[in-house]
Image (cartoon, rainbow, N blue to C red; front, side, top):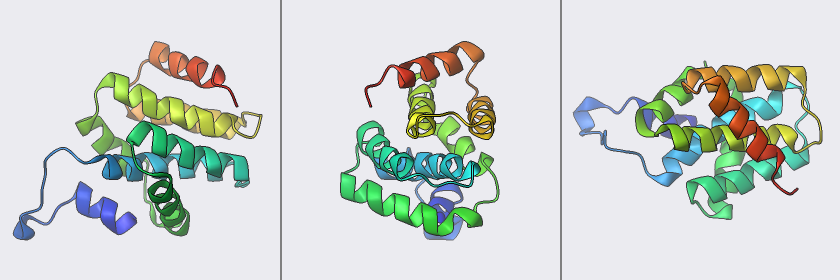
Amino acid sequence: MIHQLRQWLFPDKDDGGDTSAPDHHQLAIAATALMVQLARIDNNEDKRELETIVECAARVHQVTADEARAILQDALDHASDSTSLYEFTGQLNARLNQEEKQRVLESIWQVALADGRIDKYEEHLIRRIAELLHLNHREYMQARHRAESQPG
C-alpha cells in the first residue's frame, strides 16, 4: 500500500505517471492510512475499530469490502513506514472538496467512536487531521456530530 500511495503521490515523470484525479481505490488507501494511524494512537488496535475502517472505506470510497480489507491489511503491515500525516492529507486536499474531506473526517471519527470511548490522543490526532485537511472548527464539529449520530 505504501508503495502504491507513493506512486500516486509522487508519480515518476519518466513513466508518464498519471496525475489526473485518483480513483476511489486510491482515495481509500489514503483515508485508510489515516484511520489506521488513529486506531494505533492509543496502542490498542480494537477489532471494532478495524471493522469500522473496512465499513467506512467501502461506504465512503466505493470500494468492495474485500478491497477495503486488503487495503486495511496492507496499511496495518506498513503503518510504521509512514513518515507523516501530510503525505496522506496533502493529496486528499488536492483531490477532494470540503464536503468530501468532511466525510473522510466523519469516517475517522467513526473509527474513534467504535470502541465506545474517545481517548485524548485520538481526539488530538483527529483535530490535527482536520487542520491538515483545512477543515474549520464548525466542519470538525459537524463531522463529529454526524459520526456520533450513526447507529452502531
